[in-house]
Amino acid sequence: MSAPQQADRPRILRASQADLEEIMAIERASFTTPWSARSIADEIGRPWSIFRVLRDSRGQLCAYLNFWVVFDELHILNLATHPAHRRRGHARRLMEYLIEKAHDSAASEVVREVRRSNEAARRLYESLGFSAVGLRPGYYNDTREDAIIYGLKITPAQP
Ligand SMILES: CC(C)(COP(=O)(O)OP(=O)(O)OC[C@H]1O[C@@H](n2cnc3c(N)ncnc32)[C@H](O)[C@@H]1OP(=O)(O)O)[C@@H](O)C(=O)NCCC(=O)NCCS
Image 1 (cartoon, protein in one colour):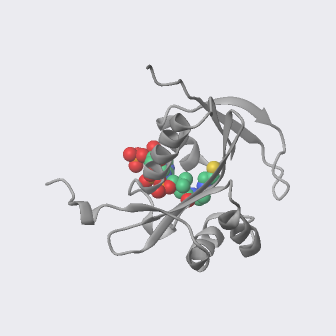
Image 2: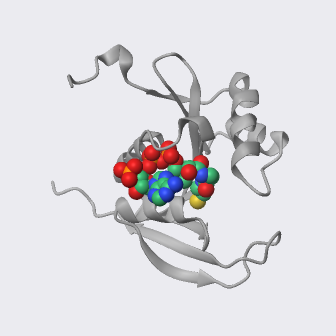
């Protein structure tokens, strides 16, 4: 199979308020306790919050990612792919983008808590080099499920 042409490649774009409805459709389909539209809109608008959407070659909003860099830690706030567009490498693309940004920033570690039962997310993070660095028993209010804290050390590029 030939390599995809530039126009066929999914694009990672800055999220805008106009994306809110599509983001919320994915959010509601992806989480037991979804964020409210208000909270997502606030994140899109915060100057320090990095919110990106991935659109496929047909312009469909397939996935999104939200993170903050707080001093030397990059915190992943949100990551989801539309159920109809999963296992196509979209979350991996967004995470590779995030890791690139971590290298460009002052972050020395990327962190994210994951539900113990979330096999898909755990495999995704592990495949990118993250490892379990902590446990928060009963962390999630809705199900009292444990959170596993995943971390990825960012080593500064050699001069
Ligand atoms: C987790 C999630 C974001 C993955 O999105 P995706 O776009 O389907 O992921 P990708 O196609 O980029 O998959 C990358 C890797 O993750 C792992 N993975 C993804 N989905 C998986 C699944 N259902 N089962 C096992 N491994 C899975 C695999 O290692 C996969 O690589 P492979 O396809 O080469 O085997 C998606 O399942 C989702 O939105 N889930 C609900 C919301 C959520 O849990 N968000 C993360 C919160 S921490």
